[in-house]
Length: 464
Image (tube, rainbow, N blue to C red; front, side, top):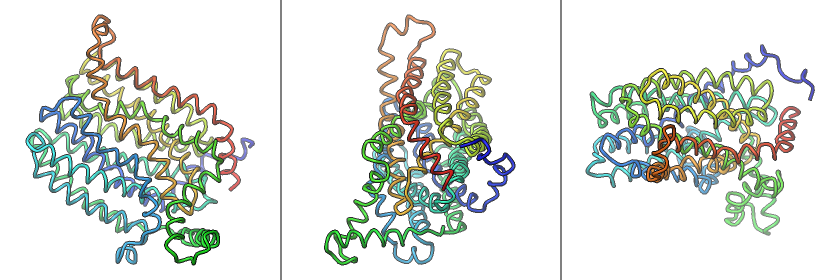
């Protein structure tokens, strides 16, 4: 495509004046908030309660549900909840139900003490994770359904609003949590978090259900399967075939088996290094010597502001030049930024370095995430948007939600290497962050290998 085919900067900025993007932002807040409840907030609480790095890392195994939510995603596409569906529609009804479940569990957590009853805390956190992973299916499908096939050029803007919303829901409440944790205690913090969930429920009631051709496309699939199976369109075998088989079959038909498998492997590898770093970041900040208040101010408040600014910049660049270069540049920058944490491990609790690290990390993460989310959306069909996006996103989340549970064990294992103690610039934490940088290299190689398919998708988006 010629350069003239790119939108002007004025057109790019005007494209953000779309009410649907506000709805995507608001539901993005709902998607990010549960990760605070069972992620950084819980890590801070467990660290203050005296649990080991390995125990805190393994507690994160509850996030495994995010890696397998594609298994029940077909139900979110097809099952209509009684009463709620008629009132709110397919996507919002599922979102609201999951938020009510999270509200109840948060109130119960506020009455627990993980030091004495870790098992109960784990069960409640797991229930929140399960509800959150289900909510994510509906939220992602809401975003995709909000824009038709002919509007795929708006995917970077939608991705930007989703990412900004996610970080707003994750960081701003996290800031209030950490700056107040020492004064009101973590139990008091979780009562406050329940109030945030009520606000998210109001968000869900405010936004409008997107118009979609989903029912029509699914009905066409039912007709095809009814003929193939020699069954009536309302038969149970046809319903299960369309619900369970067709979303995955359509993805492989559209991309081809070889390319589809390669794409799935790329999605899995792209953010695995960032996942390992993220799981241990709060523990690292505390062990380096930062207080809860400092963590709240730099990691949450300033981190949120930096993410908002850099996400808007990154999305504008992706709108104008496409996501392929964004994936490659963002992946390289994302890997290199991990080395800032290795430097912090050597310098200690220096607030200026902490600030610089947060800004660099949020810039590279925001840029890469916009390209990544946009790319996943390009791969998603409209008939089964919940299922196909959940499949792709769950693979991307596998490192963050499952493998990274061993991040604490990895740091403890590295600490046993005596030779690292003889190298002044290579303590266990520095070595750990260098390893997270190396983890990104395979996915960068795959970006180069998949460049022709990426270009094909990009050209299809421009001509849609």
